[in-house]
Length: 354
Image (tube, rainbow, N blue to C red; front, side, top):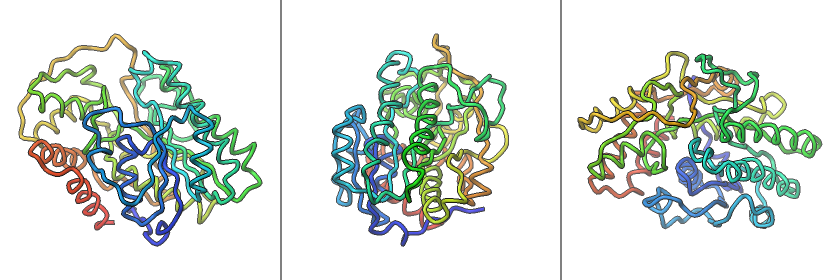
């Protein structure tokens, strides 16, 4: 198995990308720009300072509109302007702990935001494929460590997970109700716990490590024994691009929902990732442990067999390589490297090996 992306496929394609100012979205925007796609972007203003999107500015190959997916009229206007062939929907409220504090906003963003987009796409006459990015947390998780395949029951105990499971359901409903007789394919991709350079979000492990080092502060872990299907943002975004190519070239032979995750085997714990990150950065830090009062699942794993068998996709970077590449980014950034040059170089080196 290998990762293969066809540059000729993307060159000149009209792509509408939501959530472009977020961590994964910024990496995707840079990749699409480098492939020569015509990219229209829609998303909130960056929430963090610094933000990867701002660090990579100015942009030359994309048109950025700052807006909220909860604003249906604004979404319709942005889609109409882009007249896209391809849509990648990454915009979301993506933090579990924030979803406990802001459940209504989380559901509005993740469920109604998706519905607003799908409604706008009903008038997109040149649409060929739309990939809705959900989460590995869409499954009914009993915390027994089971690796969820795509046919596992959907569910969600916390507001974030519930909202992403609902996002799956409404996407399937709109696809079957309004796109069944069109030459357009609507699908979902399920993944999470992505690491890589340039993530400055709240309540995420790697950004927390960066902030502790940058500010000379103590690192605090909530659940050092929790496991997650860690993967690098480049591997995951490559999977999304491969999935879209396949949806457009072989729509009848391609599933409408696919998991993306690391190869089978034990998942690394939060504590283990922390140790690997510190070692890669040449740092020695003994973190504090302060268990969260909010309920979060301890064990999470997804079965990515379908991605391997159907798309020929598998993560090129194992957990050690993913952490090393991530540490290289933050280490260089902390030492004053230009973020645009650093990010573009990692993308180019990854792409050169495809």
